[in-house]
Image 1: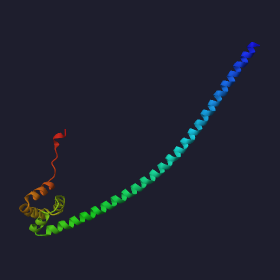
Image 2: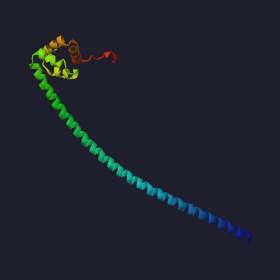
Image 3: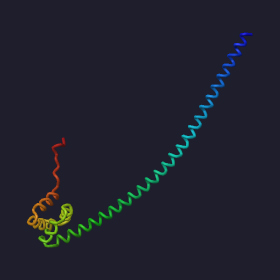
Length: 154
């Protein structure tokens, strides 16, 4: 009888342990379900944000394409204007052209000379050398190809 009672107590302890384990498992399952629901919600939010980012990227790409096209158009107009201006200076008296070019920004003057025939550019540069030798020197230097150092190539 004592033996049966001990078995019954042990069985009762095992049942209590099983109940406790069962409750813990249910609690863990509920926590996992909540976490899974939270993860699904985050995944949906991330998909939405990814969609928004993709749309913004498309908008930026479209604007960039538009800006590049606009830049190319502006560059073309500037080049045409510089070509026309170079023709004007080339057909002007070299001394008069040199006086005007001496007041110009170096970069623009170089661009003009590069667009002129060698004969016209030489005449204007010669006159510019008399008016402003330093400016003529800077223009000549800017138009001279840069030296390549082959010493580093092995």
